[in-house]
Image 1 (tube, rainbow, N blue to C red):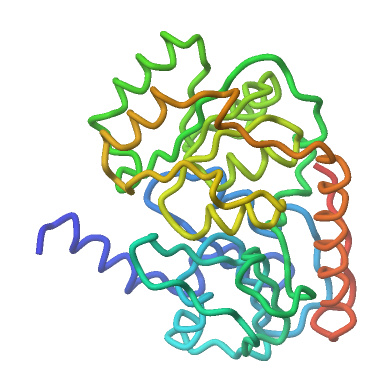
Image 2 (cartoon, rainbow, N blue to C red; image 1 turned 90 degrees about the vertical axis):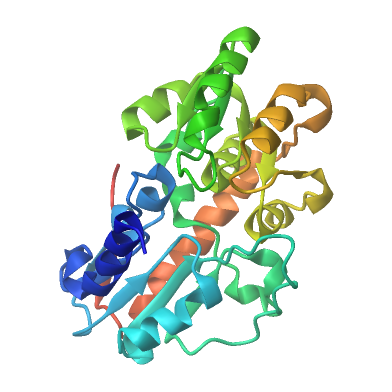
Length: 297
């Protein structure tokens, strides 16, 4: 076992409940990768809602992708499912594996998943709460943004220079998802096209009325398109972590032929926001909190 791998194992072992943000007694659990990920950061409900009078021990887990919708994670940490809320979590499985099973029920006190095509009861469809971010209200700009996942297991470091060259030649802006929120908002809002292998890059692009060229390596990208009533066949499949696969897909993509968009993006954005606001109010109805207040960003 290499030192790098050993450090990751130790980090997972030492990652206790206290490593997660706590606000008004609520523990907010979300992905905390070694590299910064603006999508993982903004998909936590703590940015959009203030919960008061929380039931002692209440945990809100979401969003992001967790294997098995985080059931094993909760069991291993010995959390009480009756005090754990699953908020907009999805799954991510490489295409080569067997298809994921439909979700009928989960043991959480309240739950909703962003995986529209994996649920039988669509009352449990809960799109990522980052739809509430006000940056999505801006009208599309005129530029093209190449927005990529910085995770070396997804976008190998050795291909970065080639990607910068492709972007420069094509006169595109280029950003990786370890960027700051301010940098992302500025360039994202100036764009009307987003070429991306990032779940949230595609999600935010579609919700804000932009053309999106979606590239993906797992089930989460197909599920994302399904939630917008876009055929999963429109996804440009790439191999996770293979530099040639990603670079060739970007180099040869056609914005006219390969992009997708939704004409009624404002309506869908409003619906997605309403679903999340209703879910937040359900925490009151179930007696998990006494009050829910939407934050101003």
